[in-house]
Amino acid sequence: MNCFVCGKKKQDFEVWSNKLVIGITYDSDFQNNDVISSMSDKSIICHQCIIEIQKKIKSQSNSE
Ligand SMILES: [Zn+2]
Image (cartoon, rainbow, N blue to C red; front, side, top):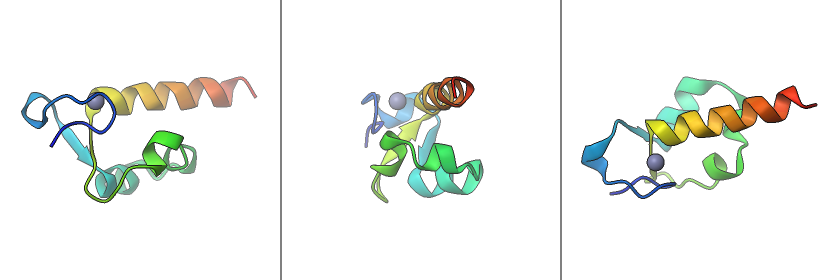
């Protein structure tokens, strides 16, 4: 299985499952992000993509 966002292979990165993402962040802005909310139960995402999404959300909330 590959990263849901960038397509990197699983062995190349720390993976986060959908459940893990939701369980760890406790952040509704993050959980409501288009990318995160379109993950399926079986989707995985690499740590780099998590960081990118967090940055994007931070910059969006700062501009409000
Ligand atoms: Zn990725």
